[in-house]
Image (tube, rainbow, N blue to C red; front, side, top):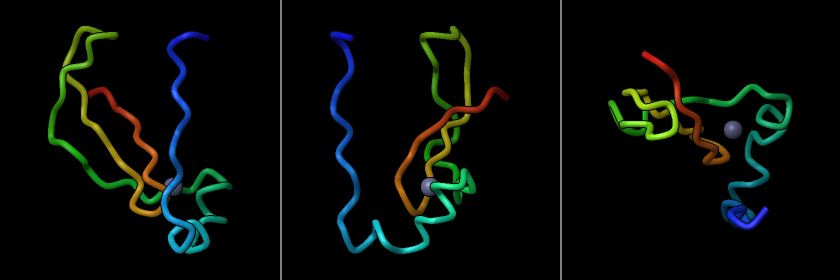
Length: 61
Ligand SMILES: [Zn+2]
């Protein structure tokens, strides 16, 4: 619990734009960084960021 930081949401104008898709789990992923090293998994992953809500996820190569 100690390490959880409050996530700042994008500006309100962006919040209302296409966000219903994001809430349904249909994010618009784009590659944020080509490859990053995930220390948790100890390997290279591709980082993806949603263009609409700014959510970030990583994907194993
Ligand atoms: Zn999204």
